[in-house]
Length: 359
Image (cartoon, rainbow, N blue to C red; front, side, top):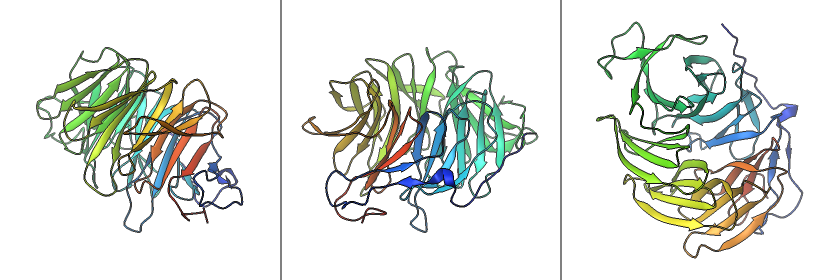
């Protein structure tokens, strides 16, 4: 059984860089979070927690996902245990659990308070995507990757317990970390390419997958079948759920080629808008309240801001030294985070006036 070590406090590896400038301007200097030694592959914010804290988790090719304060960037801890690049990491709705997907053929479930690995979910190939249902105290977790299979794991049922989710469940023997969990597969043979992202809808029974066969699919857990599909143009980048901070509405954003796709979050397959840019897009994040979206460059190092309604490019931010593989807005919409090939995470202020460390 491999050990899982939780590092606490503020590390030298968590030092932030911020210029001593006024931040009331539109172009505030970003906070730069160091600590990772290889490219950042994915970033995910928590919801606003009970103590008004926001957390952010980062996945990286250095095998070691990290947890940070989502406003200041202060390092909280590192999840140790994976033996391959971590392609995606997500926090549960209450930030009690973290899920990670890795090239070591496993996904792991972690306790964010202790850093302990609770379960290791063994797969037959590289795992690229992981997702929890929205809301607190999740009972399920979804995984996908090079197997081209969408798996749903029951966190409340181990191999020795009867399952309520499948009449003939399968289980995976764990190489480390907790008991074997029962799971089932949705839509065998449906995906024609690697599953690169999974997003759980606001409806508990709705799961969304984005795969390398240039398709986004909406799955109903009750029928265990796809109920909608959208074809994409160009190589798939990110697929994320973007929630409004002022309403219950949400939007699914998908980066593909030079295109930014926006789907209605509550209605499977309903395309709100497709925006074609002049640049290849690696990552995409949408702020529904400000009606603006951010894209990370695939073939350059820039972060670009666009107006959703006019589709015009509003600004270009420079600072990274490699492609920007991931971007995400915080739940308040007052900042967004980017992760790059250069191994750094940057937090960019997206509001007027003081906020966090921007005074």
